[in-house]
Amino acid sequence: MTVPAGHSSASDPVLPLIAPDWPAPPAVRAAFTLRQGGVSSPPFDALNVGSEQTGDTPDAVAENRRRVRQALRLPAEPSWLIQVHGAGVVNLDDDESPRGGRGAPSREPGGATAEPRRADAAVTHSPGRVCAIQVADCLPVLLAARDGTAVGAAHAGWRGLAARVLEATVRALGVGPPELLAWIGPGIGAQHFEVGEEVRTALLAVEGGAGRAFVRNARGRWQCDLSAIARRQLETLGLRAISGGGWCTYADPKRFFSYRRDGRCGRMAALVWIESGQDQ
Image (cartoon, rainbow, N blue to C red; front, side, top):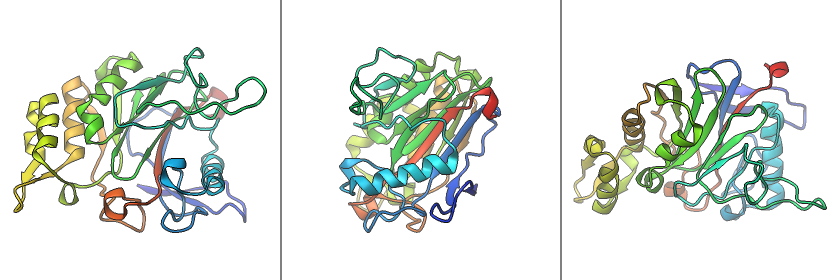
């Protein structure tokens, strides 16, 4: 479901967003940003929230992130990660974590900004800390405890799925899988995601039943349904309440960035957090 985010002024236009349609409790808030409503110039137009690796100007990215923060009334700056297509998980509650503790950007003594941490998932059990994943074809997967006491977000491209990033994120949450809810966000659809035998082999090694997510094409390669694979992995882990899927970033250039379609492009964000009692 696409909805506008309010709370804007004349200089802060309403941002179109996808609100996850999942049975999360009231304390859990989540959103997926689209490419409209920002200030970045082509090929990053317009609401690029991706950091320096995209090639966009830092000032434009900072303004786009500010607009997201204001439109969603976020309780804090999202904990932006440097994503490396692996299975590393940052616990935002761990104040002893390297590179800033509670997430980036944070402040070192003297006011310097700490570097974002290199990981592909984040979890928290604390109100006011925002998990964030950047995507432009890879799947974002959001997780929440049914009782609203824990949330997490994972960056699940084919490499992350092969590295078991969903398993690592579920484990880091420390909540029994039957008590978790999952939402699979927009990613590249099977009709546009052609892969070789090595990708199929790597993913089947994690979940042998994922074979139905691959269809051989006329070139002897495979059309891969990432959303189906993510759903299958979550089911194998024991989750039963799985929502989302069905969007194709490649096929909808008006709303979505797509790395495979465009090469140089911006990034969207999937965000999830727990509101404090007074903000619910």
